[in-house]
Image 1 (cartoon, rainbow, N blue to C red):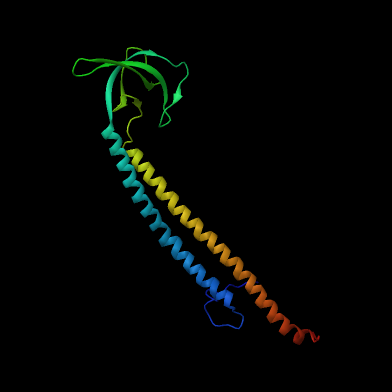
Image 2: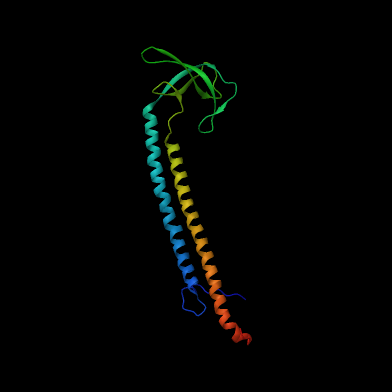
Length: 193
């Protein structure tokens, strides 16, 4: 029959070793780090990532502009994958600016777009076709991903450190028990060492 005594490592006992005390304090430190420090690290990383992602999104919005254009022809026979997992074709589009000038360019359009349809396309300041700027959901997705990864990484580091401390404590405990047994064993077995 096995009985378990809670908190035995904290109580005075002739069976308690220094490695037991170290392991008890380590368990307490691991609990605090996993329950308090890891979530705080995740929140800090998430806040930093959110600020960075918002700054990137605002910079993209400042340097990119949307144009309503008519699809006049396709150039690809096979679709490619666009950001967000959406299939897209490269197609030739044409639009007229407010001043009356007509422009033609090749850009990505959704895969189900037909000739003659009007689509929204994005261009940078140099007139190159670019992806749309990151929206609010992309910013939050990035924020949550970074925060979760930071918290999970902190937990893994703490647990790895705990496993190292336990391994060292176990070796020391076994060495202490071997020394104690070397002193006690001759009395019990009546052998002389």
